[in-house]
Amino acid sequence: MTCDRRVAVRFLLLISLILLPLFAQAQSGSPHERLLPRKGDIEIADWQRAVTLPVGGRVVRDVAYGNDPRQRFDVYLPAHAIGAPVIFMVHGGGWRRGDKGSRGVLQNKLDRWLPRGFIVISTNYRMRPDTAPLQQARDVARALALAQRKAPGWGGDPDGFILVGHSAGAHLVALLTAEPALARAQGAQPWLGTIALDSAALDLVQIMQGRHLWLYDEAFGSQPSDWLTASPYQQMRGRIAPFLAVCSSRRRDSCPQAQAFVRKAASFGAHASVLPEDLSHGEINQQLGLPSDYTGAVEQFMRTLDPAAARRLDDQASRIAALPVIISR
Image (cartoon, rainbow, N blue to C red; front, side, top):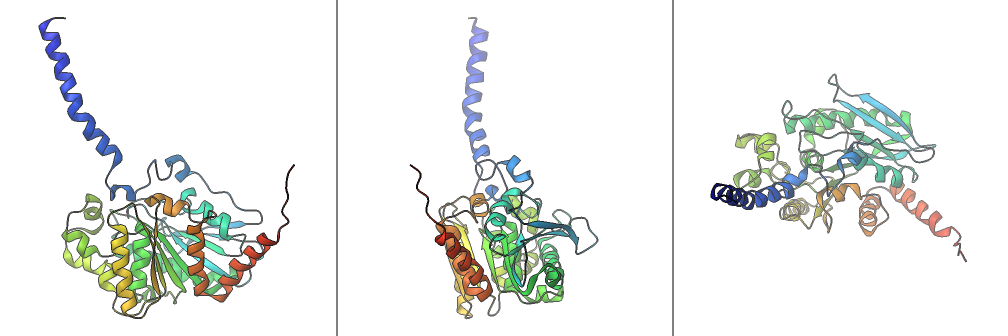
């Protein structure tokens, strides 16, 4: 090997030693980067694939609550819905992407709760960069208001709504819960309670004043006044609807933010609690509805909100327990 060739080989080896750790770091991502769907949480193909309905279920697609194509929601109906409680789902995606029909958002929830007699509604909302999170929250409230008005026509209870949001969607439902005047201004009526699935964006002022990822700059900008008005923690000024904050114990910032929010809510007399789970950010959303202690804990919170919801959950559990045990030989 010539001297020049040996120098070239050594140079390439040196470059690879420098770049490989950087590449690995970029692939693994920070906890904030994992707010977006990716392999290891939910496979991208699975995230995009359409859901399948349980037996007897049907769907009303693309109910318009505004003129923009993103201002649409889907309604998943159980067989023979009468006075049914309603789970109102808001997807995540870093305030800039995501979709109401994603399999990772819905499938296990539909499999679990449609057979138990719940209606499940999944909504889209306008996205960054065109629409700021505060306006996104107004979109969600506007969708909620229309869904409440239309619920009796689908066999649903307009007073029986439970808000559920994941990631950016969890921030949006937390903001509406902290400052219900935002929802009232769009015509929404009070709801039973809120389940926030792994939002680490409950105290935006704290986030934006410290080290943070570009994701938050893209979503909330550089003006402290914008951080304040979009921050659930700062906007909470009194007793809120019952609130369950599910947080990933694998993330550094998720549970501390949830605990601080819940402490403030409790100081106003609210029924609020934190549910830490040893799951990734994506798994907290995707695995809700699978038979597990996690799903059971969420359903226990749902039982406290409404006797009708409790009956549906308990009746189904009783039916399953009463099934004969078949032993194969």
